[in-house]
Amino acid sequence: MKAPVARALAATALLAACCTVPAHAGRSCEEKPISQKSFTDALSAGLALQGALDAAGGDVALVARQGQDLSKYRLKYSHAGLAFRAGPGQPWRIYELLNDCGTADSALWVDGLANFFLDDPFTLDALVMAPPPKVAARLKEALSDPAVLHRLHGNKYNMVAYPFATKYQNSNQWVLEVVASAEASDIRVRSREQAQAWLKMAGYQPTEMQIGPMTRLGGRMFKANIAFDDHPSALRFSDRINAVTVDSMQAFLQARDEGWTMRELKGPRQAEN
Amino acid sequence: MTANAAFRAAIVAAALTITTSALARPQGQSTFTTSEKISIGTLSIVGAPLVSVAASTNGDSGPVAGSVAVVTGGAYVVSGIVESIGGAVEILLSSVSSGVKLSVKISGKTVEAIGMSVGTTVSVISETTGTLLVASGKVVAFIPNALGEALLSQKQLPAQ
Image (cartoon, rainbow over all chains, first blue to last red; front, side, top):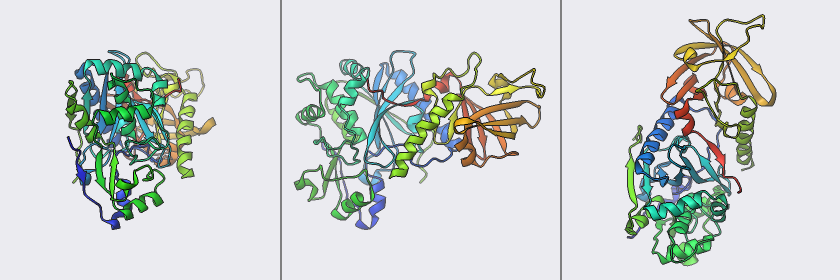
């Protein structure tokens, strides 16, 4: 299945474009008080997600949120993480890669389900992708071993990291590479290179966005967490920027036809427009 | 970008601060382990507040960790703000109607960011997931019950 191709943005919208490139996820840079509504919303969205995860019947799932409005790229969810609990009755935690507040670095975090929605996301909708039992067992193994998770983490963050290079990594790419390590039964995946080789072999198609030179220049100049120098020249200079998105992961996992179940949750609050 | 990096450090520091201000807690209240004490933005996640039903000026009936049920559902007024070590601040709240007093230790940043001072009204609101302390529409502190506690955590993945 071909990932959606997003249309180019006007070069005049430089900064706006930079701030809404897919796969951005980070801690809020501002230390501002949280409104009662944001907090209550995050807790109810977290509670609803807990219900959906419990109902899915396993101890592990991919989850995604709609942090930003990416409709201009024809994408819905901006950021994914791996939900995991040690066993029934234990609290769910989301293992996720987060950008360190606009810098060029990232770290792996273990967060609560409400924390996933605490930074005022665009909507409180969520997507739960539950793996088939065989993949679930291998994902659980990976999530129980921090060393495995760190081995598949590249701490140089780039919102639009090229999916088949290891210079940078975005939040969805880390999730996808961990999933690749669990999915690969023909080869043993121990490194990011091996995960990407397997993804290529398995036919993973990233999302391709058309991002022109002015927008790329703006992104590079004004943001530490956007870079294009990992993209192959042939693609980059024809304005074709490929990145790992939630939508492309969902399409890939669905197309594998091995029993991944997808469930969307409507949040208590919808986009205000 | 150095300011941003400093903010990350501030979050971690705030988390530690709250750890040091852990309050005694009765049965059924927060069971956060110290490493899970967290601060999100300026919001403090705290254990149970200290409650003293009658003023204890002579010190022989000191405050005890109270049931949140005793203190919820009312309007309180900040009657005192006491700074303690490590940037933590103890706010003293007096109920407008019942005379109940309580004290909550929170991050000094919260007090600053919300602009709390003596006389500020604080509502104590009961939710499915715990009890919220709200001033000017902003969350001052959250005292999670078991349901809320399971939903909140924020820590870096350990190395091993």
